[in-house]
View 1: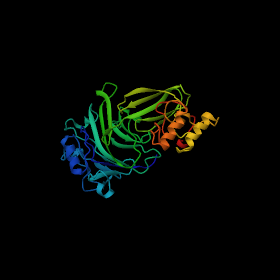
View 2: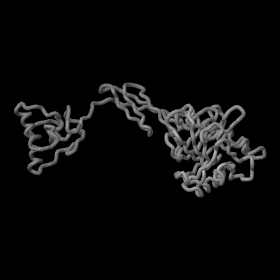
View 3: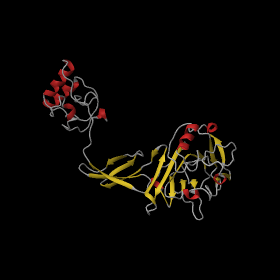
View 4: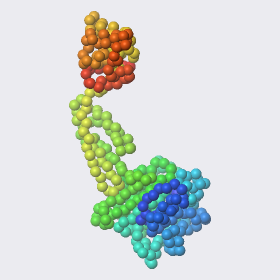
Length: 363
């Protein structure tokens, strides 16, 4: 366990939709227009002043009291991108928090039970500080502290490295996003219900920086291949078998709602494509008089075979014969037609005609 630091800004808007607008006044108004039940901005003047619930500023039980080493910083002073006034600042030590024992109070409707209810959303800005790569942070961004549990809660790097998770009866685990940097991020966590029939649907949404997060898990189901997850919803697959082998790659997509869909992609391993330049019969890297002479020598004087027979098929007819050196001479010295592709740059044979064992200039 290592000592960690993090910051929270624009507080928590419960049952609010996510609108990300640069600039503190515009963002504040957008959140207010959604009429959240609770909204804390941490914009109070004093570094350890209680954070006031803007939706009910006179309700003392909604005040978040600074405990431990909890304090505030100015976005302008730390040069942050959100430009959203002030932010809560935490040193990662146990007990450092802004805390209220019973938000809403007994007289409020729906009162403190709004968070564990069937449908809720929490929206906030956050910045992880310090080392976000090694070790285990075990950070709680937001938690509802009950008699026996911290359910629900938003946790970060809690045994699952660098994952930000929703905990409500069960953890979203690796179905959620990973945070590997110290930039500011906008987050919305929405809870609809669970697989036990509680709530309106077995669904949870995690939206980071305006986009719903989807994770992809790739595996080789059949055959032999090297597989690399590119981290952007795609994977690079390199079959390691022989031509004609079948390779099936399985991808499973999850949206963080404890549900997923899967698909299987089938690949038939083919011959390796060799790139070449047509009319460069001797594979010298240039097309000149030596090429038709090389072809004539091969065809009629028992000279060496072209390294790439497809390159020696100068007119693209699908065979190497006398017409090819004539075509080359006509192109070079009599303004004849240009050799067909691939020419003049390296490329594959679009007709898949003659074989090409090697063509060093294009390797």
